[in-house]
Structures are given as structure tokens and as C-alpha cells.
Amino acid sequence: MDNDVLRQAPLFSSLDDEAASALGSSMSETRLRRGDVLFHEGDSGDRLYVVTEGKVKVGRSSSDGRENLLAIMGPGQMFGELSLFDPGPRSATVTAVTDVTFASLSHDDLLKWLDGRPLVARGLLSQLAARLRKSNDVVADLVFSDVPGRVAKALLDLADRFGRTADDGVHVHHDLTQEELAQLVGASRETVNKALADFASRGWLRLEPRSVVIMDIERLGKRAR
Ligand code: CMP
Image (tube, rainbow, N blue to C red):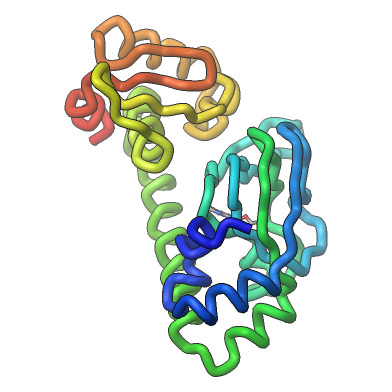
């Protein structure tokens, strides 16, 4: 298991090396292929996961089959804690968007681990608070921003987490189809495609399959505001 990646997760951030490797070795490894579902919204669940390699999408579906993506998570990011702190079924479906590896811990083991470790509990609370903040931003953007603004913001968020700076711009290999990008932004594929084509025609970015090269991050940032 990749300890350097695990250490980025909030569960590990306050631990010294010894405690981190003890916790790491009590976790088990799970692998999924691209497109596999780890669990569905509504399932009962008793494990928490940290992505160690690859990416997953966290989404919900409407009764008529439409999908909305709540988050894309990559290495070092954690999920599966809501059904522990607010006992109930899984609040979303988690699907691999690339081949993925996770480290996982049972909720029971996590509760034992939290006993007497207030700093670890604080790390988890801080992640929950950050997610609530982000959800508030998403709701505000759905109400106040237009689709191109939301597309620009989503691209900048993906660039922040998965981008690699090169001479010709920031290469963001997001691994999402245009349909998935649209589900992340909460708009139709056609509207999102139109916004992307408009940004490309202005020279702000270049579209590539499952990735984008951002050439003018400043203009994109202004459009996201
Ligand atoms: P749980 O409900 O156990 O299973 C689904 C997981 O998706 C949930 O725990 C969270 O870890 C994660 N999740 C749910 N909603 C969001 C969100 N808005 N942003 C990021 N992650 C989320």
C-alpha cells in the first residue's frame, strides 16, 4: 500500500510515522476496473475508503435515470464516512472512472482508532466541514451562475487537483467523458459542449479525449467568477 498517498488523507494527517504505518497495515486493499461500481446509493455500508490510485466518481441518480455527479476523487481522497457518522444507507453511488485501488477500513475499526485520538477526529471533522462548504458553493452556483461559468469552475477545480503544468499550458487529464463532465456541472451535454467549444474558440483551452489543456487560466478564472 502506498503510504505517501495514504498520508494525504485526513484520517492520517495528524499521525506520526509509526501510527500511520500501524493504521495503514490494518487497512485492506480493494481494486476495481474502470466502470465497476464499488457500492450503490441506498446500499448498507460499513467501510470507509481512501483512493490510493486512479479516480472515482461519486454520484446520485433521479428516479427517471438522470445522473448528477457530486464529486470526482483521486489519490489521497476519502469517502464512505457519512454512513458512519450519520448511520444510514450509502448516500451516493461510487463508480471507478479509471482502474482504481483503494485502502479501506471497517467503521468499527475506525471508531476504535478514533478513541483517544482527538486530533484524528478533528481531521475528519475538518473534511466534513470542507465538504459542506463546497456543497454550499455548488448550490449557490446552480442558482447564481450560468452553465459556462460552472464549466469554467469545474475545469479549474479539476486542474487544481489533477493538473500538470507544461510549456503549452496546464494539462488536466480528468478521465471524464463529456457526458460525465455535464453531470458534474448539472447541465445538458449539449450546453456543456457549447461552452467548451466557445472557450476553445477563444484560445483559452484545447480539448482532447478525456482531458483538456488550459492555455489561459486567468481568463477561465474570470469566467468562473
Ligand atoms: P457514504 O454515504 O457512506 O457513501 C457515499 C459517500 O460519498 C459518502 O459517504 C461520502 O463520503 C461521499 N459523498 C457524499 N456526498 C458528497 C459530496 N457532496 N461531496 C463529496 N463526497 C460526498
